[in-house]
Amino acid sequence: MNIRHKKIALASMTGLSIGVALAGCATDTTASTADSDSAPTSAATSAPSTPAGTPAPTGASDAPAEASGAYTDGTYEATGSYTSPNGQEEVDVSITLESDIITAVTVTPEATNPNSVNYQNQFADGIAAVVVGQSIDEIEVSRVAGSSLTSGGFNEAVETIKSEAS
Image (cartoon, rainbow, N blue to C red; front, top):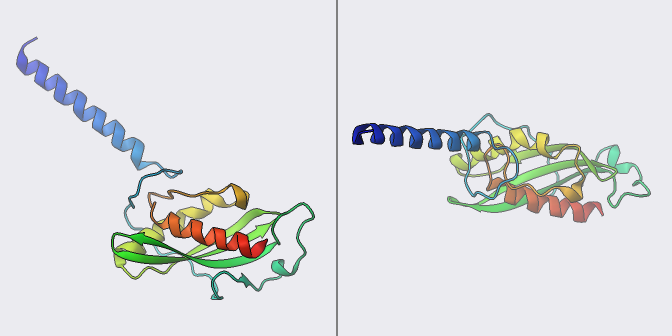
């Protein structure tokens, strides 16, 4: 095999390896420790406005807690913050609990930087698929739909909600 054929084979293998590595990263919507965000998507739904960290008034929140549950059933809202390359950002989180299980979640982007708003929208669009049906004590989100920085604010809001609901 001459040098030219070796160079072509090496370049082909390198390109194939890079393609496989990128394809594996492109579909990652589960937990990850990377600190990067992904491309923007559509806007998220808005949650009703209540003070951060206080239970939102709903019929479910008036119901007594399950005897075995650590948290009172209901809908709770909190605001979490995180630091992005553009500075401090916030995200509003609304979670509905039934027997310590998350039955609904809404993330409302509150970022001031347009780039951060896009990442928060991406996160908001994908978070329900990750946490709904899970015990609130078992979730620790690190990346959703390619957005990893927003998860810091989400996790902070979840801790506030756990405190309020207990």
